[in-house]
Amino acid sequence: MKPDVIFDFKTDEKTSAILVKRSFNANLSLVWDAWTKAEILDRWWAPEGYKSTTKSMEFSEGGMRHYHMEGPDNFEMWGITTYDQINHHKNYSGKEYSADEFAKISTELPPSVYLIKFYKQKELTLIEHMTTYNSLNDLEQSLQYGFKEGMLGAFDRLDSFLDK
Image (cartoon, rainbow, N blue to C red; front, side):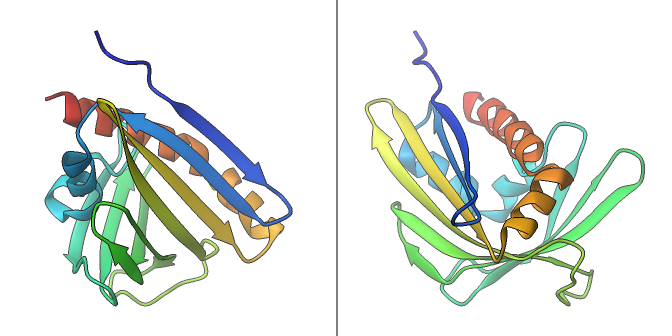
């Protein structure tokens, strides 16, 4: 019998942050790899109907992932995820930016700082994904752009990958 999935999505207007808690029915090593290896990220880091493709990635402190996302209605965007601190199988943190195809940071979306924590809980792995923005306006802009829907859709795809 599969354990119930834990899901919690909260915004904190005082700190301009979003906290997402989500469990996955898989061991911690596999969930960690899904978040930290380009060939796995490209299989799920986008909601259904969208595709994420890594142009380059170095998962190390000071490294980054430069990726492209495309979807319906000619949707297209480039992004950069930096990796500032990494504690293997425990957490990692960095910054998120919108960018162009040459990895030049753009102002299309507000930048954010993130911290992702990983916990083993019996047969589940729990992640806590904290995203903090420079202002409440930036947080609201990100939500209007589809942050919550995108994350929910990507997590559904990660569940499908982990089930295989």
